[in-house]
Amino acid sequence: MRTPQGNVLKVAVPLRNLLQRFAFVLLIGSAFALMLLGRFDNAAVERARLGIVDAFTPVMDVVSRPVSAVNALVRDFREVVELRSEVARLTEENDRLLQWQTVARRIEAENAAFRSLLGAKTETSSFLIAARVVADAGGPFVRTVLLNAGRQDGVAKGQAVVNANGVVGRIAEVGERAARVLLLSDLNSRVPVVNERSGQRGILAGDNSEWPQLIFLPNQAQVQPGDRIVTSGHGGLLPPGLPIGVVAATGDGVVRVQPLVDWHRLEFVRVVQYDLPKLDGAADGER
Amino acid sequence: MSETVGDRLTQVARNGTPGLLTLILVLFSLAPYNFPGSAQLVPPLALMAVFHWGIYRPDLLPGPLAFVLGLLQDVLSGGPLGMWAAVFLLVLVVTASQRRFFLGKMFVVEWLGFALVVPVVFLANWIIGSIYIGAIVDPGALLIQGVLAVAFYPGLSWVMSIVRRMVGRI
Image (cartoon, rainbow over all chains, first blue to last red; front, side):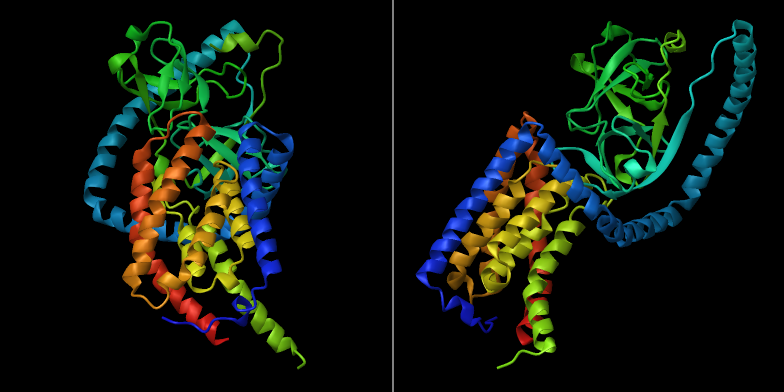
């Protein structure tokens, strides 16, 4: 496997070597300087980062398309194989959901009647921005994805990101055309939540595992496996009542929540543009 | 000797190919693969390119370019800034300095060389990453990623040697 070598290598004059060595030391030094700078949130570094992410998002969009085409093909194949069992499962689920539909209709009517009796203010409006996941970045250290929607589409820092199943995460960084989502499972993710059954509040804290932990609960004994966890709306970042997951395990004083979102099937998501209720007395009336 | 436009173009094509290939691998290693654990397990494909070109054509993949490509990988992945930049540059310099040892040997030697580089790189990543997030990173995912990197190397190296021969001809 010999290749003809360029003459460049043979004319390695000492001066050139010296320059190269200098450049090498300079670059390694700047790499470590960047590691330090990136550790402390530096505004200039942040801006530069976002600029690069912005510039490369259209490219990542193109690159991710053949990959997602292959993904879709694999999924289609699997679906064909599992067609029969899937139909049986869906039929059963449909029967159950039809029952729920009746219940939901009744409750909806009841609720509307109660609301009009009380004169309660209805939920503030939220607007959804559709986006595609273009990079499943992160590696072993962080749990983030890149979206192909940014400031020009109305995305802002802190907004909730959901898919058809439930909450995916929160917008952590926004560029013009791109945004980075901090997934619920990331070590730095903290989301105020409420136990739908007991009304208990807590914080859902990611720890880089697939199932985040429920912390700061007033009384852990009241949590049972199977309890549904939804956003509480506290802190005003996320709208209340977005489904997050179900309590999976409560052993060893650690309460783990299995998110409704399938981390391996994140392709299209929606960013929730949520208008925080103004301080006119309506903000506390939600829960 | 006057250079024609055609000469210039082929020169650009030849000099730009390794960098472009590495760039494409950076982007592909970050694409959403949607299989369980994909974000944690997809091996650093560009690292393989840096190692390969470091052995065969270090003249076509200059250090600063490797540094910039590593930095791009850092920025897009949202991980510790400067980590892959330093790794790419160091791996390039080390392989380029040891290239006489690898040249003309069987492929297995090159593969073993890569298998020696990977644990060092991943240990450094583990330490830097743990400092960066302020907690001990689960070494399991890194271990599997490292094994996958070694397992993927022959395939990617084969593709790159085809590209290299094409580049060598122009």
